[in-house]
Image 1 (cartoon, rainbow, N blue to C red):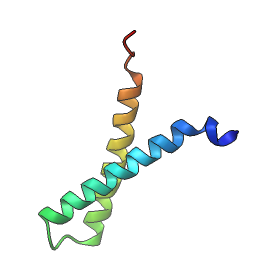
Image 2 (image 1 turned 180 degrees about the horizontal axis):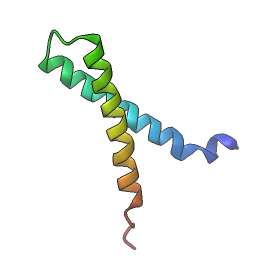
Image 3 (image 1 turned 90 degrees about the horizontal axis):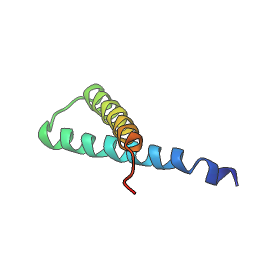
Image 4 (image 1 turned 120 degrees about the vertical axis):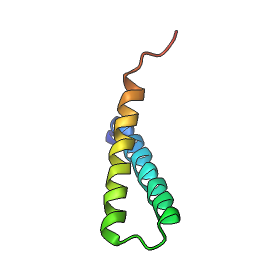
Length: 64
């Protein structure tokens, strides 16, 4: 029962992790010799942007 209560949390984390993974792949493709520090920073920024994007999308009213 409690798993269903946190369904929005699992969805948010899944979308944010997907955004972090995609930004990591794009950075790795563009910069072949990127250091681990740069890749971690890019992944964290992608994760945060994914969370912000979900919050912005969720705050918009749905049409009737």
